[in-house]
Length: 98
View 1: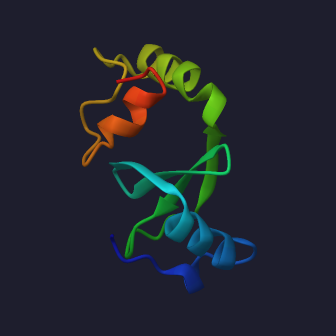
View 2: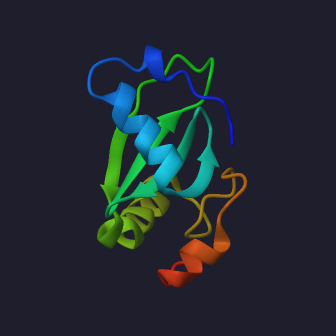
């Protein structure tokens, strides 16, 4: 697992992000963030040194729809963006996505 700077995430994210990365399911690495699924929600958790903030990405039930929208807006050729790394294909396949 990558190192995260929980203490720099501020506010509610300090403890919430720790719970997400310890108890959740890793989805993929995307740029400055790792995507995690936890309790029915997909979160973007910033990797150490990125200077980014954590955020809610989408509900797990809407992940497929969100990826379709992202593909259309960004012009990706595939549902899973090509620049994603360490994709948890088993997890996405279980959702009917990969």
